[in-house]
Image (cartoon, rainbow, N blue to C red):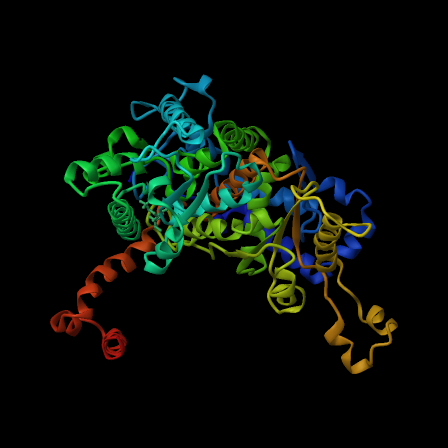
Length: 563
Ligand code: F6P
């Protein structure tokens, strides 16, 4: 194991015991946000934070000043500050893979070259070397200087990847659509289900399509299968239209003009037939789910241009610096992680909703699911010992107001406590009026109404006063005290989005550190991959079928009978 300190058992700390007593006292006295707001005119001020273009309101959480103090004690006792420094300095805190965790190096300014040399590598200089190549390449594609094999400019990009090589780029592409200014659209293919690629290439002209194969390892089954499918589609199309004659030389030329790659494994990229000059690298100290701001974001640079990507990186870096430099008690990034621990471990909350009140962020919850759950869905600590408490909440969500007409009922009146983050912006890319009514204000009033209803509820007396029959009163009451955090931004742009992503990356880090988890490996996805390889032959081979368990055999028998 790398030479890093063993995790502190959070449950054995003085802060944990104090938090447990504090929790029990709060519950015994009756938690009432309504009363807490009435008793303290400064509650909102005390729990509000301004960070560049983002405003955070934590006042509707089930916390008091004492809670915050104790949670910060817990962070100190479990070594959050020291491990934060270790991460930023490139210590191998990813113990099971013996790797540094340096996604924060991806957004450091070029002037920091030479300041972060890890395992003999000048990380920041290398990052900017690749960024410069990507910017030059993207400029050529965007201006039409880069041509397909028949001399036509690129109009569409198909980006092939999965997990961290897909979820980040798709989410950001959707989020920043108003900034796409080159007339180039991007389609993302991830699922190995052939339905995905078939639908995504529909209507595209191979002569004006660029394919980006994005895979950290360049071995992932889904991505490599889809990359071969895309190659076949492109070459067949070019042959059918007479654009190429199908000779080896013409095929190689077509691949050179229409395929580029993003990977840490440049040898396999070359083996696939992609010109190494058209490959953009990153490094094993960038985890897949932490990679959207690496070369994995190439499709975004093509769609939005280098300037927007620079602003995106600056947003991340601003949060990194804030997270490092701000004392815990005033550090909203650390506090959001610690408050999640509070709900998870002391209130038994098993899930956490993320509810963006901006349609452009509709893929943000899906993106966060990988970031949070692949990172902290673990039962083993970074030294191989079992965790000592529950870990890893289930993150989920949906863009407002769609969620309101779907699952909010359960958040308001169900039996589960579901802390929720609401994310909204003061300005919209698409102002609209419905008569005299500003539609964005109508939308924002829903965001405010939901957090208000969740916090303060509706009493039986209020329900009765509306003339509700007595037997129906309980069904129409709202308990309140359902915790929310509001993140209110000026507008959804590249900088704000970079900030939001970095915020959640560090929330994950804080929670993982308190629990003693290596948030940067993902062994839990391996078994399924291995078994899929073993099962594939069983569809046609009786010997392979006989080696399967009874249930798998029966399912394959159904398949054989019906196809
Ligand atoms: O889901 C497992 C995983 O390893 C992720 O961590 C990663 O983002 C994804 O697969 C894709 O891997 P690659 O970029 O190597 O194709």
